[in-house]
Length: 166
Image (cartoon, rainbow, N blue to C red; front, side, top):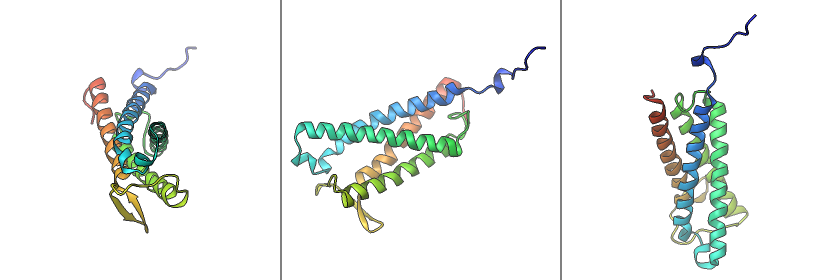
């Protein structure tokens, strides 16, 4: 007796979501490296830190951004994605990942600025009063713009690889 096999169209295609995740995370890394470098003057380390401390801060924060992106993408794929992502449920995953990223960033800014005093804003940082404390506008915009742009490019690349997507 021959084992039953599913038709090719019904088989799980992990390459689609793995490829989408790789593309997104590579773009997130590059975008956050650029953003972290550009926003450095909005923090006091710009005037108080050595070049080494500034370089370390950019590398440390970019690595943290990548970990946030990996975590939010994984959580959203589990919560609202499916095995055919990014061909299906793309925008649900993107929207929830961005919301989670902004939420974590708000928490992290509060914790590291107000509680741990691990870093400080310079007078150049525009701030928004949220939940009884100031949150830097630049990190909030970072977690809207960089993921949104990365998801948009990921979507365009997935469309190009797979033909028209819904």
